[in-house]
Image (tube, rainbow, N blue to C red):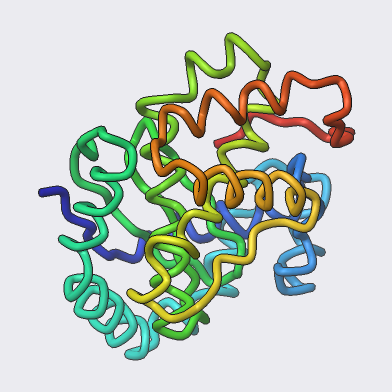
Length: 234
């Protein structure tokens, strides 16, 4: 069974602060998550130009004893539900989760992931139930990328595949919520797609059938979600 290990990588956290300040994703502008000082020193600069200043600013948090306590708390809490999570995910998708994953702490609420390198971020400022939701959410994304993304993208393109990847996490509310007792809220722009997925899942809990129905739904000309800022940053 796969495992998730929790760590702090100071440079990764600094990069997440810088990138969130400077690069808007197709899901919106999250720069407000970043401290104003970091936004000001990183504006119009490459990461290497301001990395040391960002690290210096974050050092008070990074050197805090609470960091280690948070890592231990997240690790212990996730370990209690880890096997059950992967078992449910694999039963739903009929695919075995591939490999072990690293969860890096970040000091902002934006939690990116990298499916190729098999890591994601979880916020230092999340309480334990919310952190568990984030972990489940990001692992679902990684699993989708590994097994489903490429074929689906051939059929409906990058933007709609990305919409589907995000919206599918509504299944966390149907099949996993008892593990952390909170909702996975998703993004407002995916509300209708998430509702469609829930309705289809209730009718037939077959993930392959669900994907086929979602692809047909997204191919329909009536489906439209504007993507003025599409990026492929993972």
